[in-house]
Image 1 (cartoon, rainbow, N blue to C red):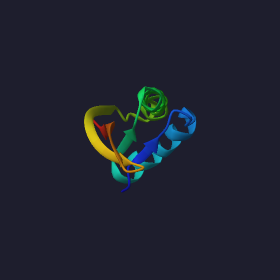
Image 2: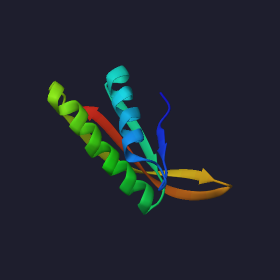
Image 3: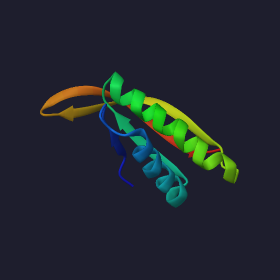
Length: 86
């Protein structure tokens, strides 16, 4: 399972659909976001996903963590969000 990479330009509804699909397939999802705008879009997507899943009795939990990634040869700190079923 590859982590979903979210940017500041990502559409939250599209990301939410991808998160829901991953949770349905694997019971978890990983999201990587670099920068405040990307983290904002990722959090919005998770909130939308919760709205999709809650009526089916699925409660989601998010565990945030820092992660180091290399972008164009430059080391950057990203936020990794682990989404799991409670």
